Amino acid sequence: MDYNKINNTSSNIFNESSQFDQSRQEDVVNFLREPRASKKLSYQYPVVEEASSYWDRLLAGRLDSISLIPTTKCAVFTLFLISFYMGLFGLILFGVSTNIVEIRIPYGQECDQQSFCNITFFVDELMATPVYVYYELSNFYSNDLNFVQSINKDQLMGYDIDQQKYCPNAYLQSQMNRQNMSASGHHLFLDYANPCGLAAKYIFNDTFYIMNTEKLTINVTNLLLPMYKKQFKRHQYYFKQWLDVENEQVQSWFIPQVHSSRFILYGIINGNLNQGSYKFYINNQYPIQVFGGEKTLVLQSASELGTKGLTIGLVLLGGSGFSALSSLMLYILKRNKSKTQVQQEQI
Image (cartoon, rainbow, N blue to C red):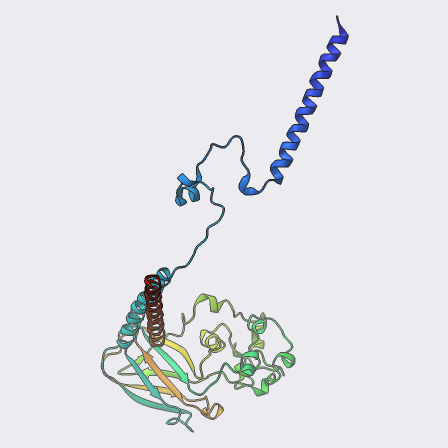
């Protein structure tokens, strides 16, 4: 057997494979160094870019980027659509809100200096169930910084806090309305209030009921959405708290509002209020001297879209008008610019 011949053949094969590997490595390096747009793989089918539509390249994944160039026509059309739909929903809300029956009963001045009082009011047209009972405190700025900062989320979730640190304006139990009684009905022997703060100190504590020929039930549950109820939890030692933070009327008070008055749902009457005279019996405990405003009871009927949304309807109508004017101005500017260009070309 000619071993020299075999060795020569093996050497040639090894040299050829080494040259092939080196050439392959150079191809890979050159491929990686090439710009992305110029990379062509041997296994790809030839594609004529000019013959492919924009949509075909997008579906095939061969579109490097999407360039959206806004035009005046596009802007005018978009603003017109916004104006149309805002105006449509605004008119619907405005029309529904004007059909909702509302009765307002101010009682702060009339019941002043009285612990118990009653006010007669009249229902001129049927108020279909459900009827919502609100109380309104005018000139009550619950968006004041001190008022908002006195609401401690941890304490309302049942945790212990340093009352003197987080409630410097009202942290003692003696400063609260109900001084010596806990929410569970036990006597309190603690110096520090739970909950504390200005919001807790000035919580609304008037109560009402309505009489016609008989007493009407005002339901005080299911007043809030679940997302709000999750923010409140009783302390593990419930007898320490002078307010029941799982009571929905209490929870409603601790939700800040941005207006110069407080408008809060007190309860719901699950029944019709027919035409006739009614009496509101009021346990008048909340002094109007605290905020220098007026206390008002508000009865509202409901519609398919909920309670009165007049403000939202007006905002939508205003936005619709603004979008329509913007669309018209863009159209006029574009038309004048086109006319100017045509005249210059003719000259």
